[in-house]
Amino acid sequence: MDTGNEKKISKKTLNKSFNLWFWGALTCFSQEHMQTFGYLASMLPIIKELYPNKEEQQKNIHAYTAFFNTNPMLGSVIIGTTASMEEARANGKGIDGETINDMRAGLMGPIAGIGDSLIDGTLIPILLGLALGMSQKGSPIGAIFYIVVWDLIAYFGQRFLYFRGYKLGDKAVSILIGKQGKAIRHAISIIGGMVVGGVLASWVNVTTSLQLKDSTGKVFLNLQKQLDSIFPGLLTVIVTLLCWWLMAKKHVSAIWTMIILIVVALLGVLVGFFNPGLKY
Image: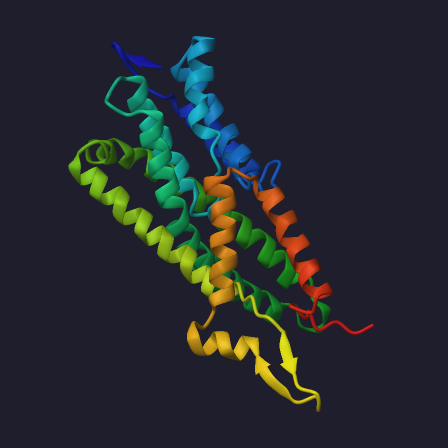
């Protein structure tokens, strides 16, 4: 592992780390942790090799217990990059756990947005289209084609990105710890916020069905239309800020936040503020 006094991750350990990510990226997946445990498992061989002392292992592995979620395929480049950064940290090159966390948190959002659109929204539909064309008249060739081709692309694509991230990590280290690094991390965090904001605007839509009627049954106040005339999407923003406040300021877990939202939704339906449109 060592070259002189410098610690170096062996190829065997890098292969083990990658395979743990490839096969276990979604290990113990939950809404609260997402890919945290898969990411943690992939870093264990690296931590064990770089830090023979048990106390150092426990101290340095803590950096990988934070929430993590990204596109599993393109996300392998983050794992490779952090492997390189961990190697630099072990050699005393000015990297600490906070720097690793900042880089990871800044990259996982943009890579998730790019990966989901490129892989899930483009590559997979293309492969499925080809497979469906081969499956006419009940032929199994289409299914076999999709399984084989997708597995090969997924494995070797992720492997390439992992080792590319590791190889370029040394160059990234010198940037990450300087003034340019702060600016880059800030820019990445902004891009990540934009991606999350775009997902929010596309997938979250909170509206109210509350209406006030006069004695003749005519609606004289439609609350949703009034809100839209003042601030379109206001309720969506309020719910989003509520979730952020609960998790970021009050340190409420994601699971309890979802439970709170369910309770609010049920109460809203009971009092007529929300209408799920269900018929019994």
